[in-house]
Image (tube, rainbow, N blue to C red; front, side, top):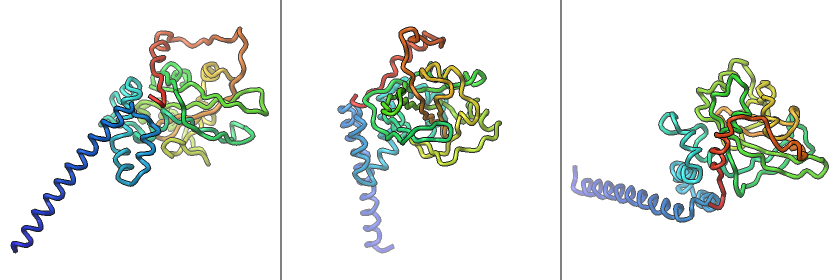
Length: 270
């Protein structure tokens, strides 16, 4: 080997090492910056849209860090037993699910005049107790977090539109997925998961919508529909009936868990 080739290889190896150290240094700085900002979701979205390198860094590290910081108990529960500490649909989809109301489009089982656009949420509350209300009895051992519905006023109706979302823990091993597979249900045509883009099953078409879901949401049994995607993300819509003072309670149990889940309040501004 000539002397010039040897020098060139040493120079290239030093340059790679310096590049790696610089990347680690930049990651540390970014984590400290976002930590000081309490992992503000709007700032992270803007950072991830700057260029390809920052988008890749956000996908590999920053979205996960934000989810863990902003919803530690919920994320710890979802990651419990997950292989390699990963969750379905990647962390970018999880972050979107935490902070973004996905809006609503008319479907074959849910009629409405026009689409309702999505938007960022100022705050969201996710609850395991609410999640159990969306599971049929034979699937009640599944772990499911569901948000309170985001209310949207529809002018040509007396009822408000409620849009909700949720996520399964360990969906690939869940009884809900096993029921869907056993039923040999086809994925819904023309509908995709608004968080990860995956194909979805209609729980209405699968006849896996329990009556407790309507009670939890405050709607009629035929006034809601929700979907579950192949990665375990849930999204749905309902018509929120205006309740009288005599209808302010519900029949769901597990009050102790409900009080515990009240702490899973997530605000988009930290």
